[in-house]
Structure formats: structure tokens, C-alpha cells
Length: 282
Length: 350
Image (cartoon, rainbow over all chains, first blue to last red; front, side):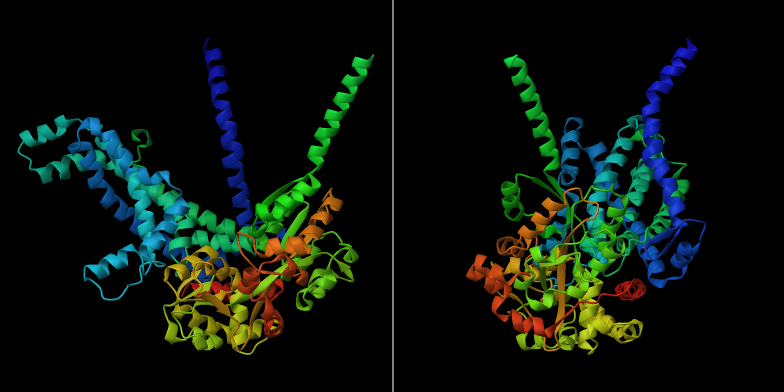
């Protein structure tokens, strides 16, 4: 009987296992091998060469791309958490339960439009003659349009717009699971609102925050579209450099090495967050 | 017996129909200007074929895709004129029958025998060309200034220019501004070009792709696009006639795109018909005014199939002058190409 159940279990998991092995593990192993290969002319030389990693560590523009990617990712992750938390808390604690779904729907409404279109829309909003500049001029805050588009500010803004929605969902999912009794008990014991938040709500909602922050980190560090459209190439991120390597040079080994390095950062982020990561809370 | 005969005939007809449907598909690896129904439909209808188009950006990406495909997957390749040799070297392109192509009708400067042929055998034919030069909003800049490249990226227009994000034409423009001909660019000339790129970069509000550069110009984010040209402003000019372009006094860079048949194609005859259609005056007029981007047709007889307005936007009457004053953009070997990319990325990151 147990043997039959075991077989049945394998039967159900086998498709997912095969899928993961074929479309994740195998390509990933190929990418690792590729990162140690060399490109001579148009010929790929397989082997264990560290040239790509050495180039990555010594070429200034590649190093700058690593630094820029990490800076942008940290800024976006931090700002998104700070903005998403109050929004999620308001929806979870202040909005009547029967309205919460509708409010959440409104919060994620921008998800319904294409990511690329949304990025171009931001470009128009932040343009010198765009909505933001015109508003600032009309209210007398500035006399001349200021440069907002094609900058790190624009890239970060585009990212935050997207990731606040994602984080709101993960934090909200965590907050609504907290029993109101915790807050009531803390209040009975004499805690004020800030103390309840600091010592009860925040620690209990850390899994939601960390899960959302981790997803933000992963998606942000590997994103090509937003910095390409909104950043105006004024500073290059790692995915942009990867695209250049592939687009004309077809240097798959160097591009793979860069992808592995990005993967390394994601792994480090995972290890840092592992203690609090609760994907089942989503 | 009659029923059986009809049935067999019907089965045979169905099989023939199904094989002919399979056979009548043409797979082309192209630039986005070919993905226009106005261009492709007439060919599909005439030959009763389905043309499957796959767009790509960057010759490296196209060559990698072809290397990873099965022989016969692709029939036709559109490729940057200066990169034809890369496809020929790897044996990817099949010989073309020169006598069946309208080469004599082409603008002399874009026939480019040295690029499209090797050892007397033609492997590709030029289908479209244009200029990487200076696009600008004539109501926002001093039009006279646009005739001098150094003034365009000087401090006078700092923060008001966008640079097209393809290193080859932009570095070609930088070379031309310093009196270096694009054909003679080498590792040593990169030292001359470097500071020019640095100046260009410091004056630029953005380094942008086609759509972003168009958006920036149309919305007033910038007033000038370095590396732009008719392909950038043509689609804007209809609503904003102040968007225009010029060839500066020092000259500018000329781009070309070629089309060829892949050596592993199993449909070489149909592929040749496609190339003959694309290079015919009608096909050329449609390709020149394609929805994705406009450009000059290589075949000078395309003029007969274009409207006055289309010719005016493309500055048809000035082409002889423009062709004389422009240089083909740099065609570096792999070593120089890598050095150019490194310099470009280095300046871009500053």
C-alpha cells in the first residue's frame, strides 16, 4: 500500500521534476559552464578559464555596472518597503473587510497594463514638458523645467511604482493573518500605538516584508526594461551590459559570467533573508 | 470503382494541398521595417505563401540564432550592410544570381560590391539605406548651428541632446568631426575619438534607442538627436513638421541594410523571388516607408511608386549631394569592434 502511494507520489511529482531539471537545472549548468568558456573570434572554446570573471573584476565599466545595479536595487527595495507598509497596514486594519478586496484591486490596477507601456508612460510624465514639471511650474515651485526623465530618479520611480504594488500584496497577506487579539492584549498591558507596532505588529509582519523585499531585490537586479527606457543610458546596469554583450558581440561566455555574478547577489540576498522568508504566507 | 477513384483523388489532392501549404512558408530573419503588412501582403498574395518574420536586433544575436537553428529553418536574412562579410565568412549565405537583381537601378554609392560580394560572387544585395546624422527641432535650435558637428555637442546645447544608442554610427560621426574617415578607423584613431565621445556624453541628456529618442524629441525633452536622421524624424514630421534633419558640413554616416538567402534554405527559388520583390521598385517604395522606420530605397526607380510628400520627407532630390557627403559607417574587424564597444561603454558609464 505504502509502495503504491510512493509510486503515485512520484507519478505526480515527476512532471514538475522533469520540467525543473530540463528548463532550470540543465540550462543553469550550461550557463555555469559557458561562463568559464572563452570566445576566440566566433569560436567558443570550452574549458575552465577565469578570463570572464577577471575581466568583470578589472574592467571599470563592468565594475561600475555592478555597483550601479546594487545601488539602484537597494534604494528601490528600501523605498518600496517604506511606501508599501503603511498602504498595506491601512488596507488590512482600517478598510472594512468587505471593501478590502476592492481596495487591493485598485492598488494593483497598474499591473494590468504592459510593463513596457507603463515605463514609456513614466517617461512622458517626467519629461521636461510633462505632467510633473508643468505642475511644479504652475504652483510656482520651479521657474524652469528640471531634468527628471532619463535619470536614476526616473529609473527608481518606475521601479518603485511597480514594486510597491507587489510589496503591498505580500505585506497585506501577512498582516491580515495576525489576530486582533495580539493588539488588544498589548493594549491591555499598557502599550501605546507605537509600542504595539514596534514590539508586536512589526516583528510578526517581518516574514511578509522580507518575502516582498526579496522578490523586489530579485526582480529589480535582473530587470532590463526599466533602466533602459527610463534611465536614458546615463548609467548602465548589469542587465544592460549583458544585452550589449549578446546583441552585437554575441559574447555568451562574458554575458553568462555576469549572469552568474547576479545570481550570486541573489543567493546572498536569499541567505540574508532566509530566516524570515515565508513564501507560504503569500 | 468511381467512388474509390474519387476518394483516392481527394486524398491525393488533400496530401498535395497539405504539402504545398508546408512548402509555401518562407521564414525570414529581418529588421522591424519588414514586419509591415503593406510590404509583405502583396508578396504573400502573389505567390500564395505565408512569410514568417522574426525580428532581431544586433548582428551578433542573429548569427547566434542561426547557429543554434536547424539547417533549413531560415530562408532569408536581412543584415547590416557592413556585416555581410560576417555571414559570408561563416558560410551562412548562398550565392545570388547578380543578373536577376536590379543592381544597375541602384544608387551607385549603395551597391557596395566590396561588402555584398566576395571573389566575384554576390551573397547579398543592398535594400535600404539612410543616414546617421543630426535630427533636430528646427523651432528650438539655431538651424545654422546644426551644420557644425562640434557645435551640436558643444556646451551651447548641453542637456538638450540625445545620442542614438548604437556605437558604430555615433563613433563614426565622432571620427568624421575630427577628420578621420570611417574607412580608416583603427585602434589609434580611438584615442582621437575618445575625447569627442566624452564631450558628447557630457552634453547629452540621454543615450537612447529609436523609440526613446523619438519620444524625447517629440515631447521636447531634447531638441537634437545625434545619430538621428530621416529614419527617426520621418514618422514625426507629418504632425510636427519642425522635426527635421540635416547633413552637417563635415559630413555624416551612411547606414545600409542588405538582404540575402541562407545557404541551408530549402526554398532558394522562393527566397530569390522574395528578394526580387523587395528590391523591385514597388517593394522598395513600400520598404522605404515602412511603419517601423523610413529610409531611402536602394533602387532609384522606387521614386515612381512614391508620393511627392514621401519623397519630400526623404529629401529625394538631395540624395546625390547627401551620398557624396556621407561615409559608410565603420566596418571594424572583430578586434577593433571589441575595442570600440569597450570605449563606448566606458564613456557611457561616465
